[in-house]
Amino acid sequence: MIISFVNQKGGVGKTTTSINLAAGLIRRDYNLLYVDADPQGSASQWHSVENNQAFEILHYPEPLHRADIEALSQDYEHVIIDAPPANHDLTSALATFSDLLIVPITPSPLDLWAYSEMQVDIEDLRMRNPELKVHLMINRKIPGTRLGREARQAMDVFNADILKTELCQRVAYIESLISGVSVIQYEPKGKAALEIDAFCDEVLSLMVEKKPEAAEVNFHENSIESAFAQMVR
Ligand SMILES: Nc1ncnc2c1ncn2[C@@H]1O[C@H](COP(=O)(O)OP(=O)(O)OP(=O)(O)O)[C@@H](O)[C@H]1O
Ligand SMILES: [Mg+2]
Image 1: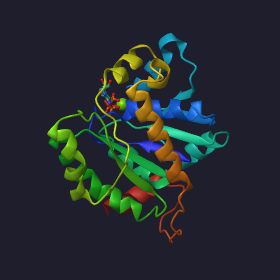
Image 2: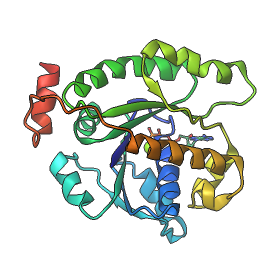
Image 3: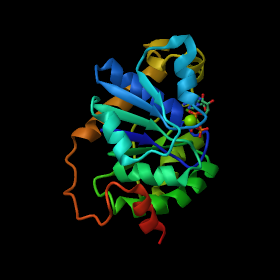
Image 4: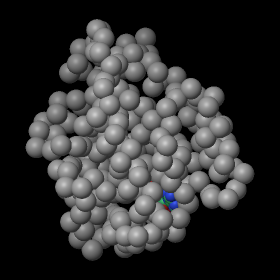
């Protein structure tokens, strides 16, 4: 399964959530490759703290193509890709060959407005990859606040799938990064670790769900550029 974390908006938690999902899946003995597609290399920097060997990570800031990922993923059950913000072409490419796009969103009007622009592109690309699943994910929810409670409701306007799992704003997500570990390693019985455990369960359940029948798609599967060109035509 190829799982990509995308959002054109920066700082929504793509790296934080993807690192922790990867660590959670590794803990369940999945064979996994983490691809850091962000030129900033945030995940790679995290990984180099304490020479963390939690999982294999590949810094791949060049444009990613289906053939690259297929070649890379031969030896792995799952590939998790952390995308940079504001890279429309890469998001489009990832949508054409990923099984699942996870779009972390913080419960803020700024994030919601940013997603409303991106949604149009995703819907377009989904027509070319009918098996693609796209799920929004609430991250940095502040427990006990009205904003937190109403986040899910506010996202209803998108008519999109939203993961049941919500990640709250917790110091453990930041402190674990500083220590170069996941929240599961940092505080195994903490609330953040429980959230990540639920996140893993939910992602795994999506993988076993029956996929829709593949509809005929009209683009050259090895050419992301041509898919993208069709999209913007
Ligand atoms: N649930 C959370 N609780 C507390 N802090 C969080 C949480 N999720 C993310 N953060 C913090 O928010 C900041 C942005 O997170 P992160 O770098 O993961 O976002 P990003 O979407 O990958 O950013 P970019 O678009 O720049 O790649 C970081 O400082 C991170 O530690
Ligand atoms: Mg990032």
